[in-house]
Image 1 (cartoon, one colour):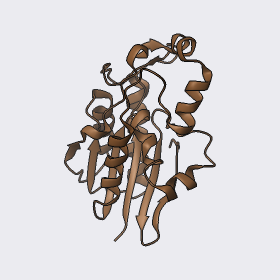
Image 2 (cartoon, one colour):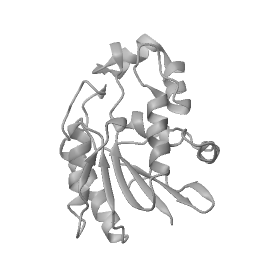
Image 3 (spheres, helix red, strand yellow):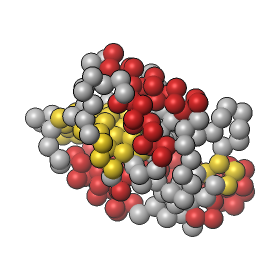
Image 4 (cartoon, helix red, strand yellow):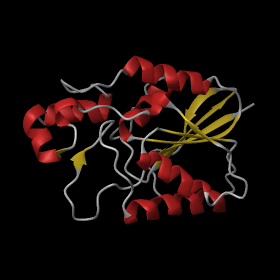
Length: 202
């Protein structure tokens, strides 16, 4: 039986025009109005496309939980919500809650590029790649059905690195990142794991 996983990055946590900061596990921001609109647009798009979710997983912080709740509000019969600690956001160490300009000044553009293209964590960040990859591998082996999952950019990228076949399929991507309010899909069928959409907004 096939397994389909829709991976969503939470919606915006900064108002338009506000300089973004590197927020992670220690900065529990709610969604702003544009982030709520992104989540509602995702919910409407999934429902219009006939998506009916059997399971719903979320990272622990408010921005992920709120995004998931708004998406599920468009489902006729939403599944119960499960909180998954392995999806928790990364800790940016000395860069946590700092403006991007300050982060760039501390670690340099090459370090940010290595993070966005290969998930190589900059010095001082707490990521635990092994735990994250193990969580994704367990999900791929978890049976069949249609799963909706909401998490952060830092956790989502390890889905693409958790399987050699997926990693190869992801090679043409310009980045491992998901934008806020964007999603990707991964399907497991008799042929293995297959990457569908990535970094797509409705």
